[in-house]
Image (cartoon, rainbow over all chains, first blue to last red; front, top):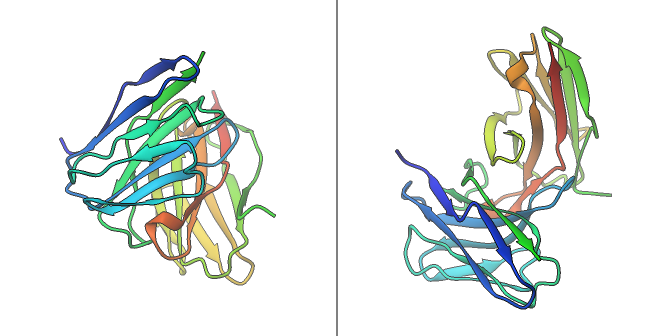
Length: 114
Length: 110
C-alpha cells in the first residue's frame, strides 16, 4: 500500500532535549512538507522540500531543522530552541510543488514536552 | 484579517439534515481551493477540490465565488459518519503556499 508513515505516534520530551520525528513516503512524490497543528488553529508550515538535498523554511521554522537525503524520507528535528514545541506534527507529500496538487498527510506525531 | 476564515462552529445537526459551511479568503491571487476533512486526532484527508464552475461529489457540493472571495461546502442527507472537522484550504500558486483555515466542526446526531 502506498502512503506516508510517521513515527512515533506519541512522543514525550523533557525540556532541553532535541527530538527527531520520522516521516517516510513510498508514493514517489518529489515534494514533502512539515506542518504543526495547535488546537483551534489551522496547520502552519514549518519546512518544505521540493527535491532531494533541497529544503526551504516555512512560516515557523525557528527552533526546527530538517534533512532530505533520500526522496522517501524527510525527518524533522525539534530542537531545544523551540520555545513551545507541544503540538501535533503532520508530514505531507505531493507529486510536486504545483499548487493544484493534493497534499497527502501522514498520521501525525503528538509531541508533549514535560 | 486572517488569510482564511471559516464558520467557527460547532454545527450540531440531526441525521438527514442539510448543512452548509462557508469559508472566506483574503488573497485575491489565490488560485486553487480545497476542502479537507479531519477526524478527531487524525490527519486531514482531501474531501474535494473546488473548481470555478462548482463541483459535486455525491452528497457533497462545493462552490467558489471569486468575486466575493468565498468558498462553500454543502452536505446533503447528513450521516453520522460525516462528523468531523472540515478544513478550507486555499493556495496561491505553489505547494508551500497552502493556507489552512482553522476548521469547522460538524457533529451529526442520531
